[in-house]
Length: 160
Length: 160
Length: 160
Image (cartoon, rainbow over all chains, first blue to last red; front, side, top):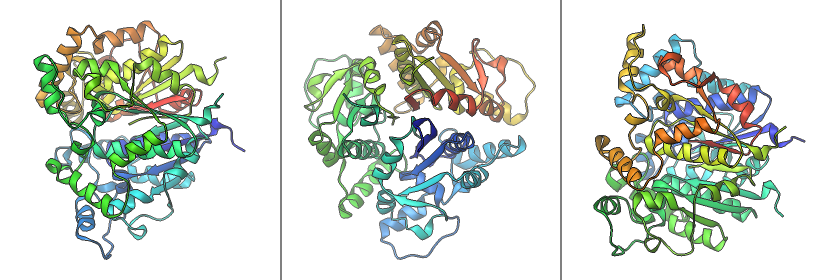
């Protein structure tokens, strides 16, 4: 059995590139230190998990609107500040590449390799009309109770 | 006496509808699991606690400005993203209603029934010129020391 | 040796005045209660630590752009909401002064007096092209592993 020092949970509420990068740097860092890490993606955070290509599905018009207007996957996210219609995000990605810092896509692969438990919030999926087949592979699907069960076993619990 | 697994605290700094919903879903979820939950409302988070009707009070012009410009209660909050002058918030509320997901008002009633301790930050009230009689019933009024005293007894401590 | 009740860590990701004030009120409050506090400044949070005056350094054009466009120190920060081009921030500072609430500058001095460990995130500094000589004195420089090592020893861990 794990002691509480060995668990960490992150609620990823934000769909901004900068906060997404911060989430995965903390998450992969904790996992690399040997912690059991759960990342729980909810609301705009679900956009990080969307497949880049459109999946044809029957949806209501409001669901279609959410689908169209929200960014589809890590490549499409903007910054929380100084985004300037995507220019800021492109600049930050260019700098990170030049300085050989892992991109969000690479961090997400690392998260998978480190066996971070990535959970998509089913209630948010329901509200936003996002279906399992629109999200990347390797996820778990659960609600807030599952998140809380993980959180109560660790001391590093953040809402991002 | 409670062990640390049995307490949770949420600092609700944000006054956005989506973050407010997330706060109360986590808060009521934790309380339903038997945890003692404290929600500490500070800065824009105080707007969740405002009564919908205006209360006539003597105020400075800056206090009157804050009073006028900030949303008065859960029905008036906007989304943190894609709000489009309130259209986004209305769409999200419509979807939640159709899918029979509890509204923010209902979540707040659940919080009361579950005996969640809801605390309004007195320093923020002072800065924003908000008085006790402008806020809903059933609140406690305290500062950061009271929050920290609760937080140090639990492991699930989030800033939202 | 410290028990976990005696440590607190804050990740200060945001560069907004209101969130900066909240961070330092929680941080100094915890330190005043006898806790060992670490504040880890990353991404936009680094702007809180910038010296008000420009330091002449050789930089790439992207680094120069970040340097120019980001606020230089506590006096230049805006509010996360209702900033109106700086008017909101000025109003909030005026109210706080009138009500004799400590300003961000004073809170930062208190943090120093209370021996709060203030750490600048080296990876963010690298991405944004910020150098040690551009930041205020008394900081430590470290990465996410140092933050996590502190966080796992405490229960009050917030992402702001």
